[in-house]
Length: 231
Image 1: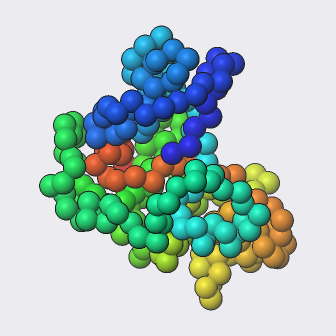
Image 2: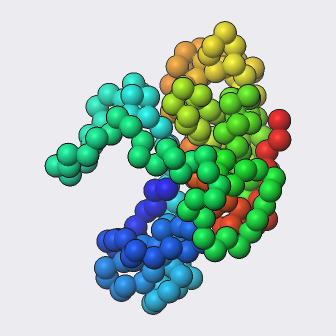
């Protein structure tokens, strides 16, 4: 998750509290020592209690996939000697009995550790599971009257959500010969950046919709009213 860190015109700096809320990390701000949920972006204790950080569009993907789209990217170098060519949390993913404490919602519509990308639009929440997206990597949907495009890249295991409205028209997308194209104009689009690469709409960019990629158990805990996309 990526959040804007300004509240009421004040820029906050954050650290890790070492606490958990419904299995999610809890942050604190150094200015007031208020506690914040990483998952919801809401202050749960302190002078900012009840305030909520603004979530920003972001993408969880592989470095190679990101670099292919943004070759001029700058990265944070913490002078660490850590190895990044393997995932130390791999054993955690497949075992539902590991690492789950104090769940408030036991929603069995999906496996607890199924990855989902979740959105909340005008008070309505919806989750798209990676298993469903792997079968249908292009989803034309609507939440709270907002036309959405959900895309998925199986190789990088990355999902993105865009508003599929362009010039007042809700476009319909499909995969055609390996390219993401809209039915209305036949323009080709990047499923990562949401930008039209060629055709009538070349150069137009869809608006990214703030979304969160996380485990199903965490999304369901914080969004018990969520809908689930079904193919």
